[in-house]
Length: 203
Image (tube, rainbow, N blue to C red):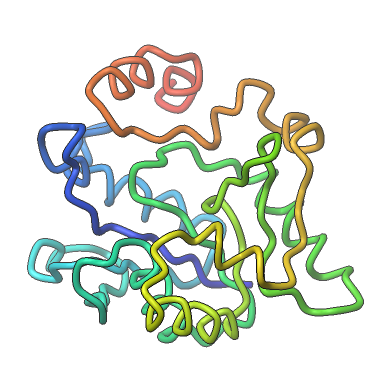
């Protein structure tokens, strides 16, 4: 559980510009996340659709093996290149990294008497597919889904053996759900830069 996979593909259509290069604390979004992930993981893998954009990144950069299919291809590629049994997975538009919650999830997996395909948080009847852990063997249902035209990670997870953290438990770590914040639009970015979470991070 010493590997983090950061998925940095995407077209940033709603943002209007490439959100991977949003500036936070005088760093790009990706560099900011990589630096924070190294505080909790010994290896960080960045999966992207264009390696040339991240030639100066401080972590290992891997080219997505699949073009144009989104997160499924990125996750498959990251897991394939990892040597860890369980891998923490985060999307590049999620700036809030909660170390206490990461430790909580690690402990759940370490204490479990069986191995799961993933450890994912619920949000009501929905799930949060990132800020989650995935087993290396999850590449097999991923590959099956990709080969059969599946585009939604949530549907692939329904056919797998997944350990879920209920929303009420997760809210004990993130009452406002801030650790699942996605910066999909300019309004999202504005709200985050004005949030208490961001102010605390830079103070």
